[in-house]
Length: 239
Image 1 (cartoon, one colour):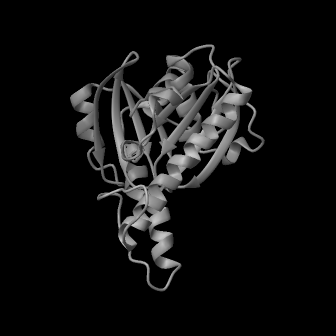
Image 2: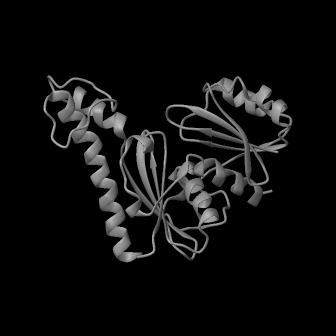
């Protein structure tokens, strides 16, 4: 059984895979205090770590105390795709894992993976398996927070609530502006890349993906586990 450790900007997650099948998963604290129980429960025998945050001392200790070595992924770790990114040492491993996971589901296709988390990332993989990189923009939470902190009077609100086409008060004006603005951004990227890659397959993932209204006309494949799927494949590739 494979252990997948995925640490993002807002939470840490553990996954167990048997072959390519996701068997179990959970969210845990940044110190990974539950990892021992998780691997015993799922009989894990090898693992991989992807993190966008600096590991805490406790998390590092818990990983080192595991009964098997954990592959600590970087942007230069060998993967099933050809990395054309100019600075792979600065590449977020979650971005690379996402395109690997998407490629396994749509082999031989041009792919765009859109991950709506703390940041929104857009990552492009062509049909020949070349990863060219992508773009990064602020996520929903960042956009709401920026409007509040960088102005004198705008309140801090969240994504939950009425979402009219045209805001009828300050809260709905902010909510509609932020959420619809991101939706237009996503549709714009998809439309632009489809001019170059007409058969583009688009994957939408991330914690905020469900808060967005992106039509199926954009050829969206929704997958909450595209990153851990990719990490599992990378672990097996480096076995």
